[in-house]
Length: 244
Image (cartoon, rainbow, N blue to C red; front, side, top):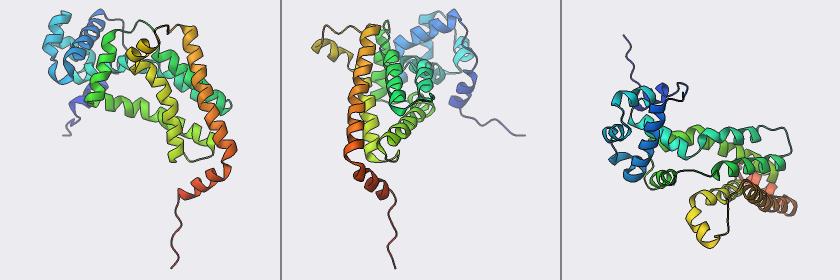
């Protein structure tokens, strides 16, 4: 008889695929767990203290999330706003010139990360993950982050005439992504040096257009001024065999 030898984390991931109904217990667990995980970190926090604070029982955690890792993964997912990655995916799926696609991707991402009203503990969760990554973050990166990054590498690689795995292509993608991420992770710094900054929808769109203009300016300049370098770099990707 074959036994199910799947890991607890995998079982939890399967169980949490059920549609997320507007269950007040589920929402309460997520809110309380988010605050406790943000204060204590994943390892130190316990399901017992989360359930006591949420006036729920352990069975509710098992039902909705499978286990502690399943609960934490959903908390991290919400903190990263991955539920809204569909907007970025839709922008990448457009049949349009690559410049327009990149601009739409940047606008979709900025509108996502700069939504107002996000609890402070969301950023503290991400700070914990940056300091001590857990399997939850790795799962989300593999499932969402890496595929989107690969599509950006392909998009920008085609724009500058280089392979997706060329160093220059990677630098361009990281530069574009870095300009967006700073508005999320450097929020306290930005507010201190730019106190007039108000992340209204209009302001967010202006910032998105600036990032797009800034990125496209370099891409267009690189493409127009170094066509020979692009061809040479592409050839370097495959080294010819030495003749015998």
